[in-house]
Image (cartoon, rainbow, N blue to C red; front, side, top):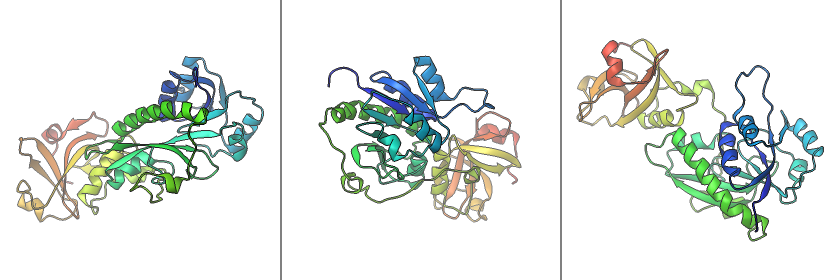
Length: 321
């Protein structure tokens, strides 16, 4: 295919803004379809800010009904649209506005983690691999046929912030490769359940998180809580009370109850008990008992203060919960 592809972009959230900025480097963006800026917000929404900075035409819709009306009034020349992090269910009539449909870049290996928050749930599950799926949009929850998938290896210390940044880059690389081929008719979409990568055929669903999800529950195994801390890094953040202070836990590791570094008093203490621990390198940690293992907190952010390591926190606080 000669020249830059022309597309319409659908997106609203921060991930969409980052993807739009990258997309504009190699695509001609005919228009950006996004949610309008609420009157009570002082800061400009990220997608709107990127569109204004790049001088792109913007079409606004707050819900499915408005989107249908807005697209019915438009006459785009682009044969294809790209949708990322949009947040509005798209009807078949909107999809049909484009001869080649709408390509959705979804940040999981579909059919795993369909739904609102695939990045978080990939981390919470403890799986070893995730990735990006390019699918043709259908008016159902992430059930469209696949154009391509790209994999990403999850390390045991991968955080939501790092994973988001890396998947934005992986998504852009995949789109750069696949979109020209699709526009030229060199690839066709295939049924999702039969075309997905081996080992990822199980259908699962993510959901929107609530603030309640961020409360650390020490009746869970330490390994689960450690994954929550990494997954909830930006929202809803992992919260508890230590030394009578409300804190957000930002980094922790798991120590088995048979580890020699664990004080005997903590080894036999009730679930949720706190004690000062010292790692092999003399780093001070805050150990909390769980139903399986010790959650060893290395960094935290007390309410109203900046993030600090456990040693700094312990210098001014006694561990009585």
